[in-house]
Length: 250
Image 1 (cartoon, one colour):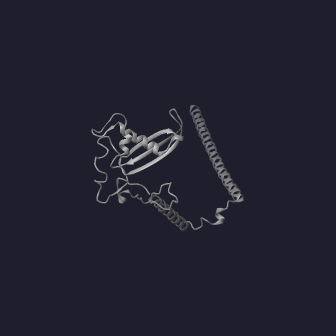
Image 2 (cartoon, helix red, strand yellow; image 1 turned 30 degrees about the horizontal axis):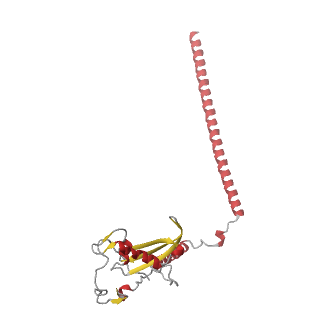
């Protein structure tokens, strides 16, 4: 339950000792500002804004509250009394029109305590999905944000279920116990096999390198043998030529 939306409200404030506070004392102090207000020309000889708001003709909603304070200025154990009025008054005109009371009320208004009242206008307004904390008991309701979060959670749950079903259909053995259990013996055996394979590869590489070296050495030896043969043949040819030359000289 709340009041209609008002664009601009008036406010009166009273500050004094808490042990001296009563609502009537505060309201009388505001009404006493009437002495400083000149109704004929709408002027104030001092501060009379509280009085103007108190008797403002268009204000029909009033809410007041008091709160204690440990100290306000030089006042110890003080109290603050505040009243809000809607619609609020202004200093641009006189607070009411002079005349006989209740002579300018609307068609549906009634004269109550020398004031115009309207039951339809004064009734409280109820807003959907809005329940203030001070209302007891508070009903359990789900506002649009609550509905959105609920639908979002349901959608996420459905997506998770669909994802699980797709994964299970693509990988049917993903949840088998044999594949999920980790055994250290199997891991050690796998490590040993890997080490053996690496050793084999290293041995093969070493053997290949040795074979290459042997081939290179053999080739070098063959080259040296061929060079020696060539040198011998050359020497033999030279000797034969010398012999021929000697025979011819003889």
